[in-house]
Length: 227
View 1 (tube, helix red, strand yellow):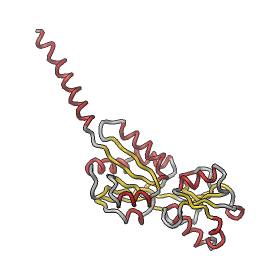
View 2 (cartoon, helix red, strand yellow; view 1 turned 180 degrees about the vertical axis):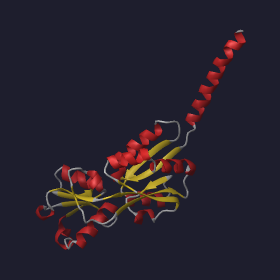
View 3 (cartoon, helix red, strand yellow; view 1 turned 120 degrees about the vertical axis):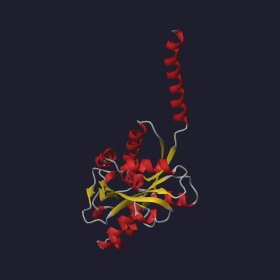
View 4 (tube, one colour; view 1 turned 180 degrees about the horizontal axis):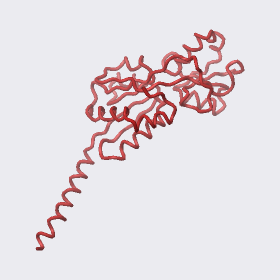
């Protein structure tokens, strides 16, 4: 009788040990994502990790900087870029069009601004989009001397919030106080599992989750357009 009574306890201990071992060896998915995705991706990763499975390591920055890091050998499994041009620079195994966005003006009207913050217009997607719009509107030659280039779109927004610029052109998702630019360029956020991903299978699972209803609800909450 004593032996029979002890068997379930042994099995429970074995199960706990096995579960702990699996948890210790859960794959870590390294994700590099555009700075504008910081809030949404942090919440999505937290939700994803609330269930048994992989651990998500997030790295945020300008898409151009992240793409350069990947090209130079940074160990990244999944890349979320704020435009197709930066995604085209890296070798991908699986690539999907994930999100859309719009531009917005934060702070003083452009006509009254002495300093206008945008992300680097020669490389960073948010700045490239802003420059495209200003050129199409015939405003670039007027405002070019007022441009304060920033490392990324969040830095451009911070320049206005800290008084270092009068106006910023950012993504609509970066500030609900901004005035949305209705005639801005189409903005696309592709997501891709990289060809040399260390944890490719786990990255694919997380990419599938990013296309789920739960993830879509979070993206929409932060103002993104879900494709």
